[in-house]
Length: 476
Image (cartoon, rainbow, N blue to C red; front, side, top):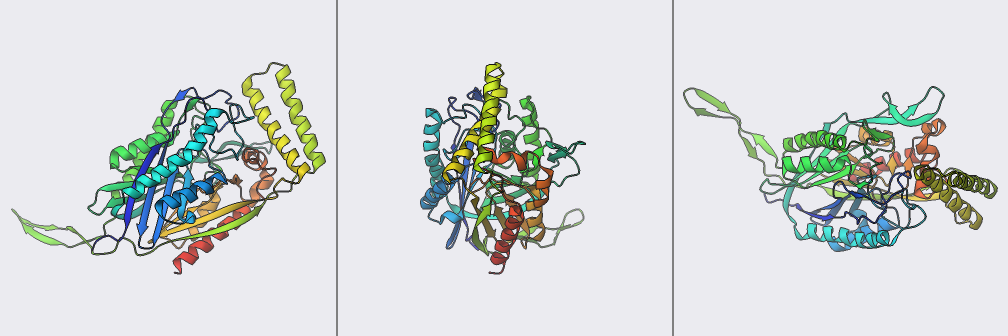
């Protein structure tokens, strides 16, 4: 039986010029000093009868709205599908450039985008369109299969100290997700066409480097592509509270080592998958003795039995905003700190984080004075069904418990959870994490330009929505 699935892959180099600042940590005040490894964007198009889905993996920190929705719309027009069928994901490297004027810069000159950054952002959308065009032009009959491996390279990062403070460290007893989820796509004649790999870990092994880099994702990609001959699309899972065990390292050899370890496991799973269904038909042959053999014979089955997409738009409340008076006090205090550090001649690695805090405080104050400060944020939840495989995409830094709950209750045989997709709403902590505090609850919303953190109960609402969409697709 001829395959009823068409698949194609396209790739573009999205490495920025060295005149840009590197996003991801405010201590890093210098422009990019060099390139450790190129940043890539890879597009996979899957078309079956009336349904067409698009997966795009970008070596970028995040792509916030409305930029993400604009680019998804443009990609959909190129491919000939709906924007809701486009999954636009970021690997979340902290060694990449700014991607949108709609999000604060975290590093470099945080007061504005420079000319090189404006030009890069304007061109980036066209580059993603080019990847989509190349993938659509390369469509050919294909088959796919999915599987899951394990890699113990990650760890829960919300460590509670004896004094009650929660810091980014190592919480060895905290929940974690070691799944290495792999989707294998072959051409109809069995040649590898693409690999989709998802793993849950912040790519922050070397965020203090002044080099542009995809972090460990780069070496993971090279290993997978070398061992499988399939272009790799990498997505980061629910890594809001998950780091690599090696983080904030200065030795780039550690980046290489970790990426290779993960790549080897992903390649092992990929090479064990069989997109073409087979059945074993025992037989005998006669040599010096009788030999019983077990040849695998292809089974005449369609490649796609079901392919569908479901989306849900949520409006998630933020935590209570400060009053105008409180915002004025916060802004004055943040400005005082910047002034004091500057007058004392402090290192820029200390001044830049203070500027980051002051810019957020000033923006929040302006929003409170004008009534423009948001009290909620839009989030699109996306679920794709491909046979018995589910891809669940969430637009933020989901805590790992979200993915673990969705996977545990999903009706799919294999559930692949993707974070940092289709927008950027910031960190999504579980309800109980708010009382524990820590960066993800108290500070992280500032980097997303929000006046307050995502409201309590948002994570639980997202879990319920993911499961509802999964049930709807599996009841069709």
